Length: 174
Image 1: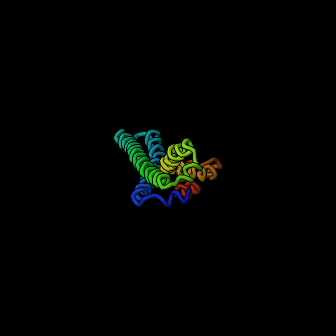
Image 2 (image 1 turned 180 degrees about the vertical axis):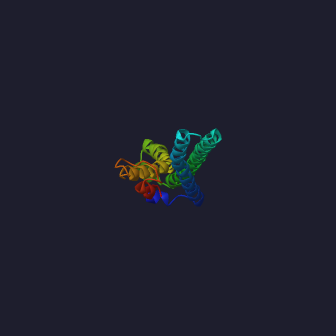
Image 3 (image 1 turned 90 degrees about the vertical axis):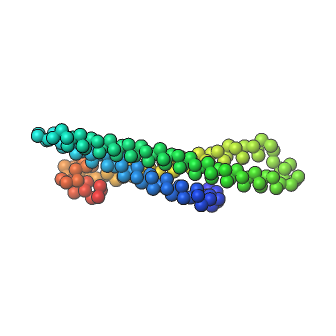
């Protein structure tokens, strides 16, 4: 696989890097949602809270959700572009190599085998690249949640998310 990744062009590496940055933005917005939910809960339970404060927090929460969704769409597009460009490069190299085969090499391979190698295998690599760029988000979020699950909070329960009252939660959420 590393030999194949060496064949990626500079443009494809740049779009993959941009996709990684967009995934970090998605993670940021997704991890902000529980904070907004906590703020909303406090505002709703506090007597005398202004309705405008509740609306403001709700709109900020909606903004985070929309920003995360927009970044996901852009990242999906860039991941597809990167994977398509990468598979085009690989197909081109395979075609040129097969075109340079002599009579002896052509008799060593069957036509179905060559067709399989130039379509199915490269399509599998294309899907791996496209899905791998988008799945980075899940890895980071799951890792963060795994850290949180192991924390013992101020009341002995699992991660409560109350950074003000719970030092272990403040350390994890940092």
